[in-house]
Image (cartoon, rainbow, N blue to C red):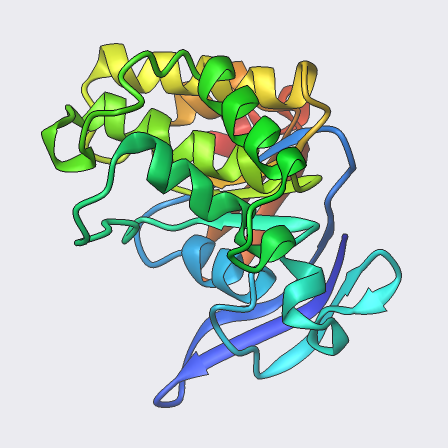
Length: 228
């Protein structure tokens, strides 16, 4: 995925200003920076949840805007901050939503296998419990299982550790790392915790005032000079 000269404004206020970088396949890339730096807006444009004003997002060599939504959802999955589902669903039913781009609501044997694999991978032994009965950490694991069941190469996570205590947040970051190392996913995530970004990422894109302050490997970005 290649991002070139991405720009977004709201009411003449430029929140993303001429941003360009490349996502390397099979790696974890974290967006860091203060509130209002443009991280989540860039994530929104990469996932097509936010319309860009200018620039190009190239996905597998094709303009992201020209992808058919159903086809795109077979390659790219997004887990937003506002992922709370109000329906009375069990964990298994939630995870099954991940198969919709493939099944269209008509489950085949392959879909059931993917659902079971995702539930097993995330160790969701409470598959028959309702989502609203779970702790924050358990619920987030269920949402990650839904993304795994979707079986895409690219996984986008917008502040996945938000509202989690340090124990559950650390466990979630370990899972994110495993998605890359064991399942060969390309993970892009927005993080506020620089320590998590430094420990679990391969690449970091540091934003400031809508621009990229620094992009590179963890070793290149997490330095005293860059952070100051």
